[in-house]
Length: 225
Image (cartoon, rainbow, N blue to C red; front, side, top):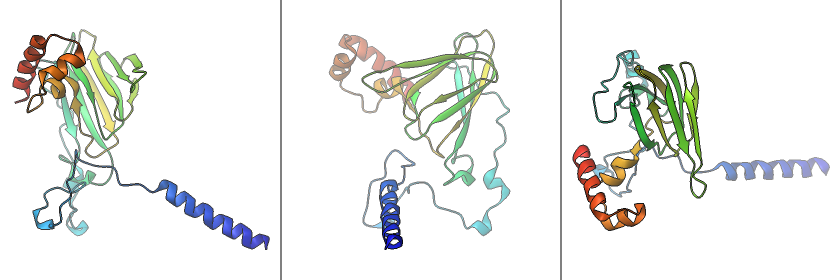
């Protein structure tokens, strides 16, 4: 009888564990609108798979991350991605990589978030001030100055940044826990959306004069479009 009771308890525990761990798969794109007729389908959650017999080494290879990115832009940084768009073999594997170059004296990877990935960054050249901010209502800032060989983690969905505080170029590499992590640069999204967010909304949200909001929108909308 004790053996039967143990077996029943074990089965119930196994079923409970199965139910607790059940969930929908994580999205690999911003959205995926359901349709009834598959002939009109365009995107799937991820990408269609090549017949394994037709795969080659080139599907898992990307050259060129030794080449510095062009930082001659308004923020003084360049992100070079190595995700499923560049390496088809990453499909379904749940990771990707970026190289980030920063100009001297203020090269910035501006505040942004990855909606689908945690990021782990290692500095290989230069000195970076990095940080992330936690969610409401605390909005706590975690920040650190990094030197070559230092590593820092940005949790999934947290707004974060990197800023070159040195007098030389800086370089970092980061791994992300998604084949398509996505990126939302906060200023570009808020002030450069298409169509533009109602200036009244942003004026109230940021407690700024509406003319300042319109000026910011005109600048970022031009940059984004």
